[in-house]
Image 1 (cartoon, rainbow, N blue to C red):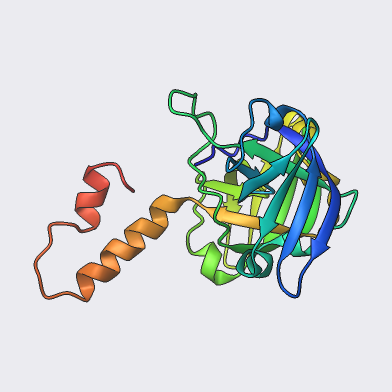
Image 2 (cartoon, rainbow, N blue to C red; image 1 turned 30 degrees about the vertical axis):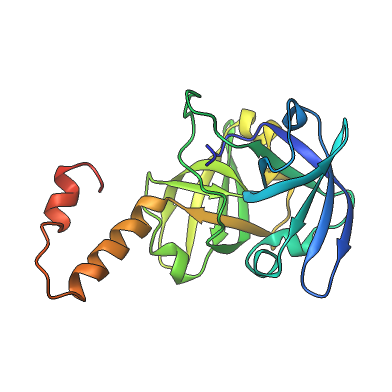
Length: 216
């Protein structure tokens, strides 16, 4: 699990692509402190396993499914990526719970400055937008952000100066693809309600139950 609070910006050193998969070498410093083989590091919001490391680099293997479902497929040497180590029990949860399992890809449609912040508009498919609610949480390339606006085609977030400096989001261009992970609570609620509808057994779980117990 992750929080969506980016720890540092890494740089892609090399990418060795197979027919559908890839081996990526990433230059970093902070996320390598006390690193071990098998540790998880979110890279642009994608949970990846450290397969080897040096004092200032680490390698990850990316399977075909991950390449299909994320923007890692478009990376090239020299590109910058957001990095975060897995959450430790006892750490402050300053963002929101992020699994590192990307739901899909969005497209940056516009940037608009407002005083000290920048509005970012992102177009997303309906399969993702249905889980996005105003004032809810969304992970964009692994960055935990609050949804400030959503309709049937796009959603918007507002980026403060700290987030601008600590992440790669505002270095991107209009038309750039970004990884999206929705708040997992909505997906669990959908699954539970679908299960309830498809089983003859009685269940006490309904919208009132979920609301009463703080799930929605």
